[in-house]
Length: 174
Image (cartoon, one colour):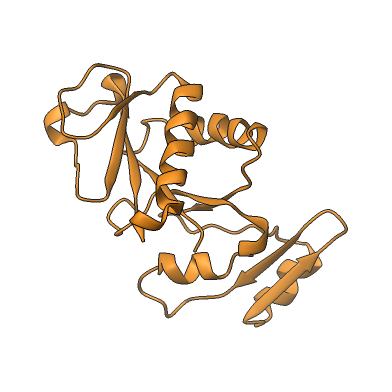
């Protein structure tokens, strides 16, 4: 199974900013990351006026748009209540990935690095560390029960992720 690692935090803490740095740094180390991003907003990857948009809006339950450079599958899910992270991961091609990074899904039972940024408007006392938290990346020193990573040290966070992946792959962790 592909290791899953969520980056979880309050809105405005810098999840996307960190991931934009982590992904190329992981790629430089030969790690092929995938990404699942959770959003609370009604989102659409297609554009009104495009043929694929119009055909999907005409009632297609699934629409696959393909070009030489990439393809995307859009599935309508109006009657689904909850997003199932395991199911979403199963849609990804495991043969092309070494790791799936997850932005959000902070309440799911998935390994996670929780972010804390002092200026984001939350107190350290509000920090939620559960049994799935493998580390906290923070811009201030914290006295907590899990490893604390420097939120501004991308290389240090990547080194932690690489070590964590090795631990996940070891027979003792199975």
